[in-house]
Image 1 (cartoon, rainbow, N blue to C red):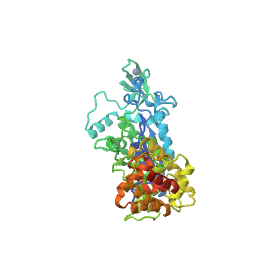
Image 2: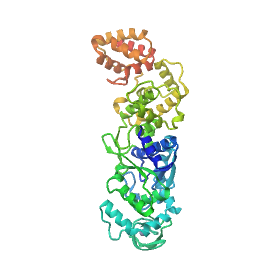
Image 3: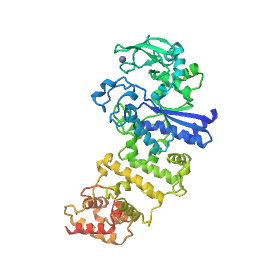
Image 4: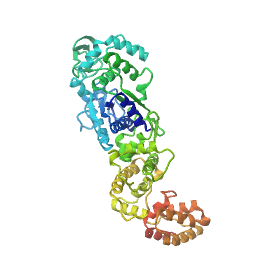
Amino acid sequence: MHWADVTAEELLKKGKDHTIATGITPSGHIHVGNMREILTGDLIHRALKEKGGHSTLIYLGDTFDPLRKVYPFLGPSYERYVGMPLSEIPCPCGGHESYAIHFLEPFLKSLEKLGVEQKTLLTHELYKNGEYAEGAKRVLENKEKIREILERVSKRSLPKNWFPYTPKCGECGKFGAEVTGYDYPFVHYTCECTHKGKADIRKDDGKLPWRVDWPTRWWFLGVTCEPFGKDHGAAGGSYDTGTEIVEKIFNRSPPYPVMYEWIQLKGKGAMSSSTGVVVTGVEMLNITPPEVLRFLIAKQNPFRHIDFDPGLGILNLVDEYDRYERIYYGVESAPDTGDMKRAYELSVPQGESAIPEEMALQVPYRHIVTLVQLTEDMEELKARIMRTEGIETLGREAEERLRKRVECARYWVDSFAPEGVKFSLQMEMPSFIPSPGEREFLGRLTKVLSTIPWEAEEVHKGIHDTSGALGTKKSFTLLYRIFLGKNRGPRLGFFLSSLGREFVLKRLKEGMEV
Ligand SMILES: [Zn+2]
C-alpha cells in the first residue's frame, strides 16, 4: 500500500476528523526541501478524504519568530532588525507588508499551482488575536512542571532564569528581555536596551519558546497529524518534549508523527535557507511541471532521503514520471504496480477525478529540450512534434501539457542545463573540410534519407545502417559538426527529423560540396 494510504488508515483508526499541520519559519527563500513537508501533508490529507475522513490541512507560517542573523542574501542594514519578529521587519523588496510575507507569498502561490488545498495561519496573527492566550496562561501556571519535563526528556539543564515566555521589548521591538516577574496577565521584564516594561500574555507582546509553543498549538488547533523534519524527531528532541507537555499540561494526545528525511541537492548536501544551498520551491516549479514536483515527493517514502539534481536529473525525473503514467494506463508493465499507480494518481494536482480516460500523447522531455533550442515559436514547435510523431493533430490534453512543459524546458535550458545539453543550430554550414570517407558517407546517407519515412526512429536507423566503414560514432560526430558546429548534441534521430527532410538534405549536400 502507498505510504500516504498507510498513514491515512492509521489516522482513521483513531477517528474521522483530522487536522494536519505543516509549516515553516519564513526567514529566507523557501526551498524545495520545505516542499516535502507541505506535500507530505497534502498527500495524507488527500488520502484521508478519499477514505471518507474529514481533514483540514494547515500551513503555519512562523511569522512571529525573530530574525536570527543577517543572512548572506541580506544587506548590512538588516543588522538592526536581528532579534525582531519577522512580521515586524520591513520587506527586502518594498512590495510586501513585511519581511515574513516577502518570503511566504511566492511560496503560497506555488502551492496553488501544486493543487495543495491548505489553510494558511500566521503566528503573529494568532498571538495578536489572542489564540494563544489560554495556552500561554496554562504554560505559565505550570512553569516548574514544564521545566522538569524539558530537562529530563532533553537531558539538558536550563538556566536558572529560564522562563517559558519571551517578552518582546515595547521600546526596541526585540525578543530576549530578562523576565523579572509575573502576575497574570503580565510578564515584567528589563531589556538590554534598558527599557523596563510589561508584556500582556494574551496579546502579541511576546511569545512562547519553540519547545513550548509547538505542543500549545497542537492543543488549541487540535492537530492530529504532523509531518516534520528529522531534526525535531531526534531522541529528546522537540517532538519528544512536546509529547509529554501536551499530555501532562493540556491532557491531550500528541499528533501522529510523520518524520521525513531531507532532500539533498546533488553534490551540495542538504538544502538549507541559511547556508544558501537552495533551489527554491518557486524555482523548482519554473523548471518542472507541478505534477512532476508532486511526483518527486509522492514516489518516495518520507523516511528515505531524496537526491535532487536540478541539472540532468530533471530530465530523468520527468522521464520517470512519464513511465509511471504509462504504467498507470497499462501501456507499460512492471512487476508490482499498485504503489506506482497510486503515486501517479496522487501526483496529479487536481486529484484523481481529473485524470482523463485515455493517456495524452507523451513527448519525451529531452525532445522538448531539443525543440525549444530550435524554435521560439509555439506553433512551429507543435508542427515539428506532429511531424516527428507522424500525427495529424494534438489532443487538447496533449497540447495543454506540451505548453507547460515547453515553458519549463525553456527556463531549465536558460538557468540549470549543463553546457553539454545546450546547442544552437547553425543556419549556415559551419566551416570544415570532410575527409574522403566522410564525403562518401554523406553521399550514401543522402540517398537513404531521401526515401525513408521521415520519423525519428527511421532517421536514427538510417544513419546507423549507413555509417559503414566510418563507424557509428564518427558518423554521428560528423553530423553534429555540420549541423551544430560541435562534436556532441541531442539525440540525432529526433533532432534531424524535427528539422525537416528538406533542410537536412540541403545541408548534407553542402557538406559534400565543400
Ligand atoms: Zn528593548
